[in-house]
Image 1 (cartoon, one colour):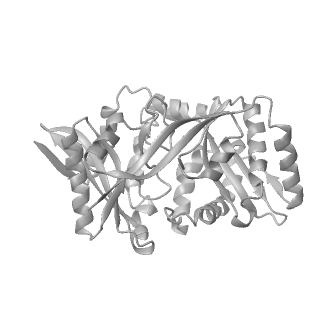
Image 2 (cartoon, one colour):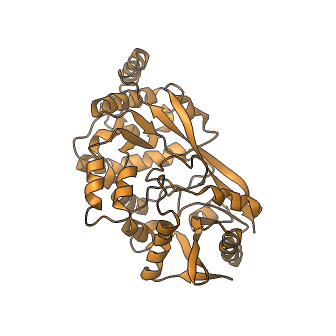
Length: 373
């Protein structure tokens, strides 16, 4: 018999987080999260996103042993401001037992119906800045710190339970030209800088990055405002994201372009790959986890592409050539030979056209699934 228990206390939520550590134990492709950071993201007092995103956490038990977990999430900004009567589900993990998956998703559906919602979708986090999607390809690829790893039967369970594909993302591995950006890219980059009277902005320390963080988040909202799936980042959330993500950034990995008044008009954020460091940390910053993460900022040959933002009036005008020229040169200086892109919607032809300028391979696909309530 499968029993579903709602978890509320800090101790219970710690067990919720740690279930993944048992279910994915010894999996060579899983980069585990830091447990304390996961718990912090669940806390409405520490994560302001939770003030607009109601969440309930459930664990499945069989013979008194934990066999699965899921979070039921209602992003009220999405429901009320975008008119989407949707309940999200996230942080899904389970043993290979269809009945367990069914029991967990039934509980999510019940929460959705209790709140007069019409359909469920997931896996999704609290907002668009969180992890999303279950792997459907790329199970033998190491996941990045900004994605969930999934076992092959997760998506099969969803489909067997009548869920259908809602959105799909693709991820690419890009090989960095070792002899620097091509002459064509360099020439075009210089042309765009001169034509629009732009300048490259470089940072020497993390403090300088944080000083421009508000402009970056404003550009994110402007860049993605036309996407039907995008929930704008609220001003009250920015300080949380600064603390959550910017602690991992190295100044060399931030590429920015400003206009002649010094206003940011484009930026791109990449990060050194922390995946192997996270495996060594195994969920803990102490006693030595922090050291593995610190070393990863400086000693690596891989990076992960995280975010790009471009002022709408400059979109389609070649600013990406400036950014990729700067990135290529920095990667060459630091001995980075490969970069992984963040998940991109499969129909985002514009961004994928950029990767086609380089040697690349599509190495992961992930998907959210939907079902009517």
